[in-house]
Length: 161
Image (cartoon, rainbow, N blue to C red; front, side, top):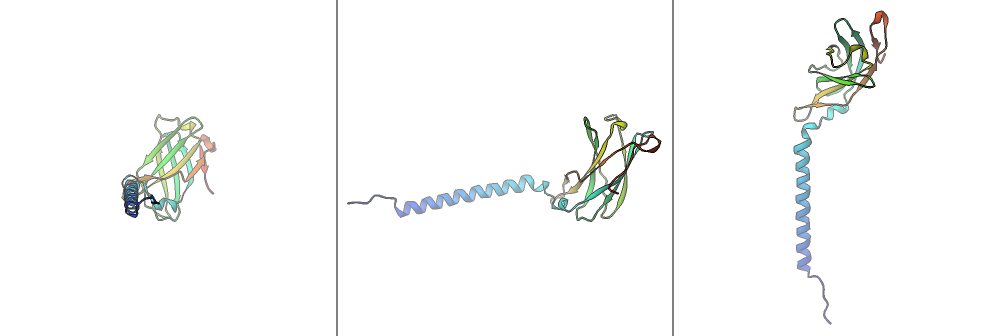
């Protein structure tokens, strides 16, 4: 009686082919991750913290004065996205001006006709930092300040006090 089965040479060739296919698939996946997402990686965003200290609305000049406190963190902030809005409308104002570690800085935002200054109910900040390839990456919103009507008809809010 003759036994029929797969020869050991055929098994070795199949294992080698499967191994080569697996190596090619893994290599292409790693190459894809490196090429497409490396400029989006900014690990320093994980340790970055900033707080809105105060927001003052200057309705005569159609401006918002936003004071920000930068907490300790390694990231190099090269700009800030200010998110302004209310329940129905939200706009983003990008300021290409950084803030150093442990610095308190005042930013003056000119409000265009995109949104009425009296309709702004909140201000949020999202830092812009440099990725590992030195390209700008916008982080998540790290702080939000809700505005309330203050003295003399100006909207003023001291945040995180």
